[in-house]
Image (cartoon, rainbow, N blue to C red; front, side, top):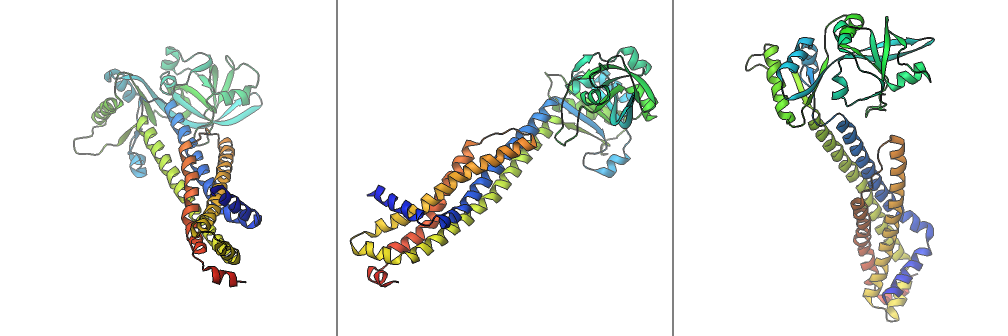
Length: 401
C-alpha cells in the first residue's frame, strides 16, 4: 500500500514537470548555497591556518607603537641595532632575532628593470621566516659588519630580470647601489593578501641603512623562540627588556607591541570559522523560502485536484492514505531539491576554490544536515496542505468543478 501511494505521488509530480521544477528551485538554491558557503569557508580557514603556520608556531613579531592604534604607532620611536643586540645577548629563550627595514626601490639588470621591495636584515631572517635558499649562500659575517654590497633575491626577481641565466655572481643595481647576487631564495608564492612574496631582495641591514634608507631605523623585529620554551614566556621577556631599554616607567603604557603569531593564527581561524557559520546561516534562510514555496504549490494542487480527492474518498480511500499521498509528494519534491542542491553546491564550491586557490574540503556533516533539513522542510510545509486534502468532505469534493 505504501509503495502504491509513493507511485501515485510521483505520477502526480510528473504530470506538472515545470511547476514541480519551479517548486523545488528554492530548495535547490538553499541547499546549494549552504554547502557552497560552508565548503568555501572551510577551505579559506584551512588556507589561512596553513599560511600562518608556515611562519612558525614559535614566532613573535615586535613592532613600534601599539597594535591597532595608528596615532600611537606613528609617534613611537623605531627600534635600532642595539635593541636587536640586546635581545640576542640577554634573552636566553630565543633561537633567532631578525631585524627588518624595508623600502620599495627600482632594480636594474641590463635592459630589464622593475620596482621591488628591498629588506635589510641579517641571517636570522631565514630562520624566523623559515625560508631556505634555493642556490648560493647566506651573508658572511664580514659582509654584515662591513655593509658589503651583496644581496639575495627572490624567485620572481630571478625570473623577471635574469630569465634562464644563473644570477649568482652577477651584479644587480638596487636603486643607486650595484650589489653582487650571492643567493636565490626558494619560491614561496603569493601571500593571503595577494602579494608576491618572491618579488623581494634581501640585503645586509647595515648596507640597507647606509646606502638605501639613509637612517638606522628598524621597523620590525621577528623573534623565534626555542622549541622547548613557551612563546608566552618569550613575549614577557621581550616586553620586560624593551620597557627597560625604552625607559618606560611603571604605570606607563608600552610604546611597542609584541604579537604572538600562534595567537594571531588561532584568532584568524576562529574569525573565518565564525564568518563561515554566519554566511551558512544566511544561506539557510532560502531553505525556508523554498519550504513556503512548496506549501503554496501543494495548496494549489489540492484545490486543482479536489474532485480527484473526492472520488478517492468516495470509493473507499482512507483519510490517512490521502494525507500520506500529498505528504509524500511534498517530501519527494524536497528530497529531489536537496539532492540537486548538494550537487550544485559542491560544483560551485569546487569552481570557487580553484579560482581562489584554497583547498576543496568536503564537510560530510553539513551535507547530511542540509539534505536532512530539506526533507524536514518537505514534511513541515507539506503537512498542512496534505491535512487539508485528507479532511475534504467527499460529497462537496465531488460537486467541485
